[in-house]
Length: 383
Image (spheres, one colour):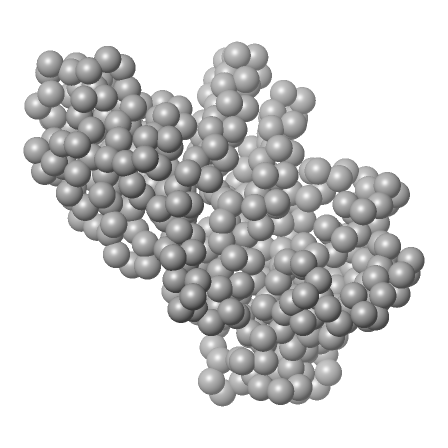
């Protein structure tokens, strides 16, 4: 699940869509904001504590552009970043500073009573882990500063970034209790490798192609939100392909003409239902082991066929390929891949024996991964 995350969207798009000098000083500010987003990740993945919060709040404040920013648990401000005496608020009870508001939405407190610190308002967003509020992210603003709608959106997205990392921390704490397939499912949802490279690709477009950078950020945000969806474990093939396209848009920005994609899917199989993020890891695997290991252009093919009662989707690349032994190891989870075994187990668990993945590959001749699911199943429904 991690890496993450969608909140770099607002940080960057805010600069891109601003009028005037976006591509000069503010372009550099946007690049700094993207780096700030990734800088929060290793700290918050260790959970929410005074130590991890203290390391994360400077970056989060830079992203929100607030006067001060605090991370709190259910009762106490764990860490605060801001000018002068504002940092002395760390350790204060939250109920003495602001109203938390409801657990399911952002709350605006326009009249704070902190004149001695020159703070007059706050935007408070809940930190939600597994459906429960574990804390709050509070952005404070100077007296006389009017809270704008974009401020609340920025704080909300920053809270989602923090919540996603805390979710990963909760998963890490339960490693010994979770079944291996469940753990791998969570870890494989968003590859940190992909997130880092996606942000780097966007940053590279800021000055030369700002409109494309904005579109890529939107694709990145939508893809990560999709990958983190927990309430709907099954989707249609059409939905999965839609978000695979967003993923590929980001990879095309990285590789340019070196990455070619061909998509050919029979319309009859588009309503077929499969576990969320079943196809995307196969495509990511093809990109990683095709384009990243080759200096020449690589073709990724996604071909879907109607087999009557079943649907077959093949993901092929013409990259370096692998031996039969390496292919078997990848499907068994022994090859250091990005979730092929996880996808196979989820498909088998959902539909039974006979469904799942198969791999054909040969060194120097590329790789094909075949995904087979029933076109309909009485116990599996998409959202």
